[in-house]
Length: 414
Image (cartoon, one colour):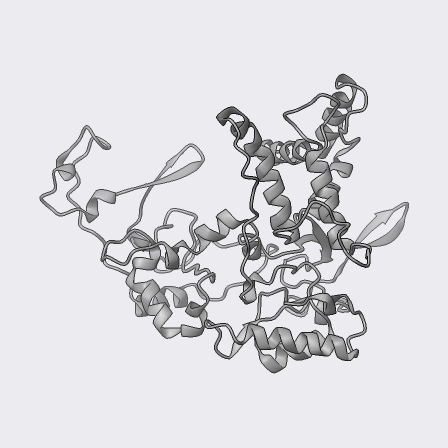
């Protein structure tokens, strides 16, 4: 597909209108599409299904999502980048795995595949656009040694791995600044160690992992953007958009800010090819042989697909049916879930209840918890029973500002 029309900022231009129509013709020609597609309008960001007339109106009025470069959600196929066929030793291949992953991460984030390293082959020698410039800059950083003579770590992989460690170990921003300052001193002169955490964090934006700050309600009821951009108080709970604090005897107003990701989390699951393949496994890799291996083998999943064919036609759609935290986290056992706390964590037992009554594992004390299991499997929760549980909850106030009452009806369960 020709995507040059996306660079035309005047959406009245006939070239932009023709490009948008060509995109719609192509998207609606896909075999899995019925009457609606995900809207690539920059505020919808492929999270809302709309009819053709609605998508076209959004594209002409508001524009296309700038971060959506590979149209894989509308049928465009990601092409695997072919590597050199030069024979290499096993040792060299092992050493290159990490750098190959970094390069693949760049391709996944920027949406470029099968590109040439030399970007000066254009006949008219056009200047690369912003996205292409970031792409080639990241590739250059992935090939640049962290310091002269360093063969194992590149400038980019060092930053990525360091920020990964920060997330895993919950390091503060202050400790990161101190660590980077120390590494700057001990590594050889001319190293590309960032001067601060802020400088290192800029790399995440080019890799598609950044975020923007958007005003939000104190109780997380509403995001103040799109139709709510100019609202001064939350239309749901009535909380003011402003927070007032006293400084020097005067009241100063501050906006309440939250961190809202640029890309939805579910969309990020499909940025990397390996993750995308796993998210589609329930449809492409699972074998329907009567054995329950995955939630997609269950009656509930299949009945849902039968009732909602438009949703199930898109195999990348994700189904979520139950709270996976707390003492009653199992959707199969529901109120009969057997959970035990171990320090601050919960673990779930009682799996032997699902075995036949004459199974030897039911009588085994040494292989499990030292007890004989004589219980029977719980009955599946019916729709009517689930409705009774919901009614037992009574009035529910949403938002972080409301404290949950623990003395709810005993039939409310999870």
